Length: 50
Length: 222
Image 1 (spheres, rainbow over the protein chains, first blue to last red):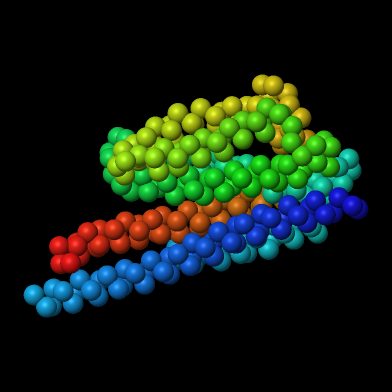
Image 2 (image 1 turned 45 degrees about the vertical axis):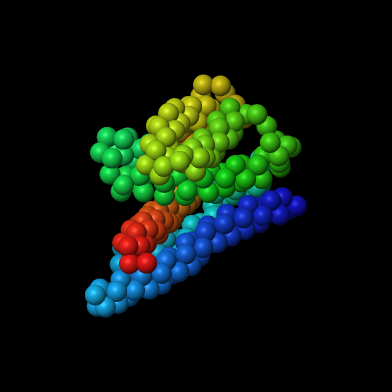
């Protein structure tokens, strides 16, 4: 049963990388959305000021 | 909405796949428990190929139509593909140690998969080295098309060169029906995850483009 460690490591690596990548994407998406909202607001403010 | 539906399908499939792998699928007689890595290794390999097929199609369409959406599709699929190819190589190596006694061997399919990984890296390198973004996209598209030659080599490697790889076993009907079902569910699980991640990555890239456009728009005001 010593080979169980190989199975454990393989599954742990795959799931950690897949979920880590998904979390990374979601985090970047959230930050980009905030930046878009900020830029939209700034553009509208500038238009209103003209 | 589509992403949420896909997320729930992925989660349901994930639980089913893990149940099938560890509870239902029998332990293989020769290899023992290590054979369970097979249910990860094969989907990772499949997604490495699928990602590059999408890169190939996206690259052709980008060169033909010069539309940014095809470049975004190719770029996103290449990024997801490089992750799955890395995982295919890593799980393959973990499988190789107990099965063949070595972490790495220059077996035809493994070598061709390593070449695919290097092609993916080249795809990103030519893009980052280009002075203009559109030129980078064009060079990357050319790599995406030429690099596709490696895909049939990977697929046919086990039949052409009779390597140590167990891949051919699936098509020769040498797999227990329960093991085959487990493998199919595992393939479905990771394919759904690929679709989910790809959609998320495309949406992210679209937002990056949108920000760039908005910054350009706001520049005359500064």
